[in-house]
Length: 146
Image (cartoon, rainbow, N blue to C red; front, side):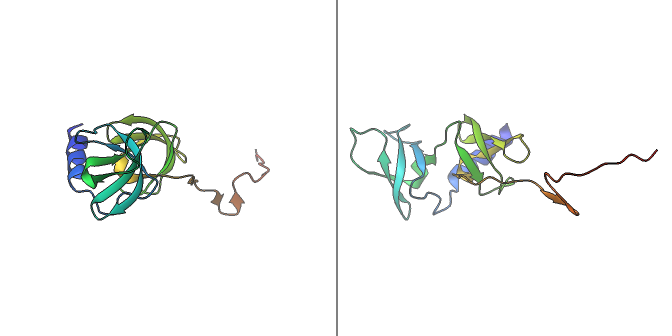
């Protein structure tokens, strides 16, 4: 767990520019509006303009990118774009702070990834579908020689 926390603090301290894209669901993690959810409208250098979920607030609000975190909920389908699991796709089954637990499309196992290493995606990765002359779902005849 300490490794996860150290990696998380490093991740939060060293976010990459261009990390947020228009349409990303985000949540405010610092300041007076902490826990405010919204969607990214535009990104200018380190400033991210979001459209808040709450309609009583102004149409868009500006935040420093370090005050925001991507936001996912169970049931979202995502693709891992950074880290050891890069390229994997799956469904979010649990959110633990800044870590997602995803049910992998290929292995059907749970994988843990940082929220910032993931984007929402409808893409589904598949495993090996061909071995030698045979393809997945081919009808084959097996003979036993005794």
